[in-house]
Length: 553
Image (cartoon, rainbow, N blue to C red; front, side, top):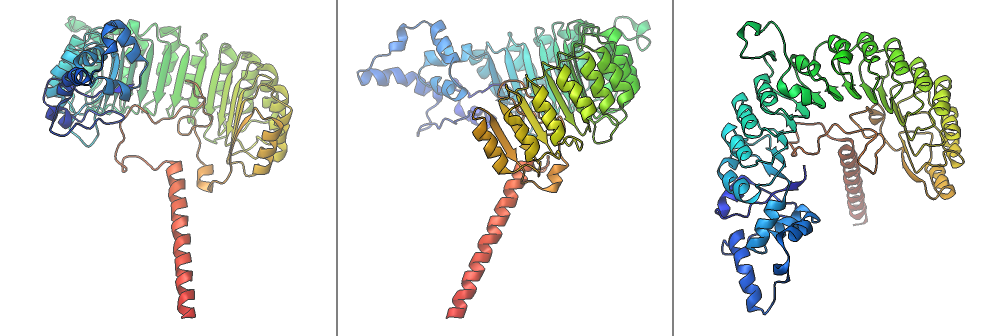
């Protein structure tokens, strides 16, 4: 979310410490228990005693705020300790902060948001999963003291209820973006936000635990229509983006999705239920839909064929949907001619292959990004893609058993606009990598992972031939890691900018959780194995040294 707020205020320092507000570089209070405000008030007097002069006194507050905007969160927190004026200007010029949302926030909210961070427009409230989070009263207190609030993130706030979300909607009617993860309220709370925030544009719900009853989007004033018809909530007309992830009863929001005529982005990750009926009704309900992400869903060719009616579709992610085949995907790719980014993870079921890619090559000449994972294309489809998609800039292939040296040479010869290439777990050797020496003139980055046929010597030779080319080679990996790789679970090709060819599922805005709540990441496992090997080698050396010494004695 941005900056982590510290809490120098006129209240006692004990409330801030109990709240656990943190900075990237924690400020240590001087001895004697002097508070931040007392130190800020004493700073001008100390400067006068030393004969110094405050040159910033002549600067207007607006210019000082501009200077603060160019600093990082740690530096801004330290600037807030200089004097009372800097404290006020720094707090009132902050637009986004992240606060530890433990229960103690209720006591600190009046001083923290009422006097210091009253101009915040982007707020993240995060609580450690092992701690007691804020409740309904604290959320209402924060929202009332942030009149400019437009973006809100709630992470692991398990004590919030539907009533608390109703209070939020009443206190923050200008809210435009709401992102919720690992909270316990249910569909009535979401409906209250939709009705109370008519400007809401982005809605993201992840691991919402209170979805035990269906969501009825009807007008409460009309008792006769309750339960019979489903009318969209007022905020539905303003919704542009909807993201549901790991929701047990996500289909209760189907009336919300179908009641958003201006919807442009729909992302569904690991949500239970049959989604074909929704996809069949979606093109007529959201004609401007431009981005669709479907991951680990019960979706068949019937739903994909319906999406072919979305003429403005630019981005398509189809990840681990085993019921989808070429029969449904090929017509979709053939009719959506404006596609720019396509991610396909076939889960190695061999049900998506050349027919779909051939249709993509014929219909989408403006394709810029293509990711194939667990799909087995051959030269019959890769050659038309390389020849017809002349705007292709980013290409990634992971776990493609049919992508070898001949296919890589075809890419090198015909993808003139290619800038980034990733090959992972494919039967590529030094011969195929050598073809990049003369091909792809705009290529700036190559990543080769888990390709045992590629040697470091060939990669070094390619670096020598093309000095401007960044080459990342990683072949010394275990067989278990060779089976990994999905669009959302591993970074296949990173981007130095804001875009990522393959995004991570880990939400960086969430606080770290306990080690037992998530599996060990591959790099941690690799480091652990290295540490184990070093420890074993050291023990053997000590044992051998001890044995030799005993024999000599």
